[in-house]
Length: 173
View 1: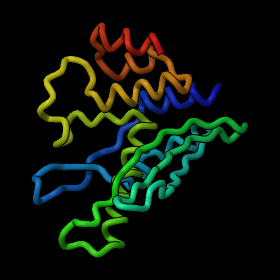
View 2: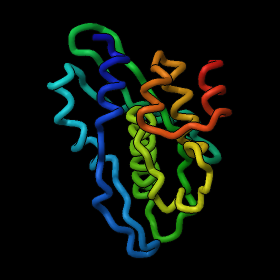
View 3: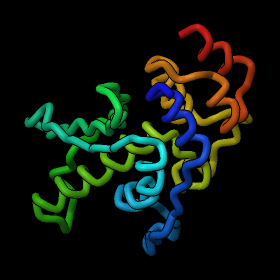
View 4: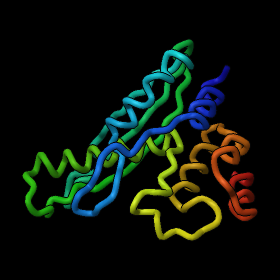
């Protein structure tokens, strides 16, 4: 089985609960740690490993962190990667600089892992006002990255409802 087939199997079955609550915004969310904990049962079962790496790509005036989540095949040298780019808000009130970087780091990890595993966030506070009958813009971007890295349209269609325009966009990559 190829790394892309393994990833497609994981993506269609994988769920990560929103086990945390933001009292200020009054919504549930999942953290990078929640995602990493939820992926563990799939690792040995599918012969894969997951890593998350970060790199400071811009340091001034606004620090930018590039986070890469990678899925490796334990039986070969194949891997699939997904990234997230986040800025560090150095003007965030009430936070020390290490906390500002830590917050951006956590956010980047969560979204890189979400991009890799096609985590559906339609119930997150960011997405509740989206009335698009297809997948959201961020999910479509994730799906495009997945197809570009060798993933199949069928795997995406098993998880998401696509409009004809979205399906056309994905097939022309």
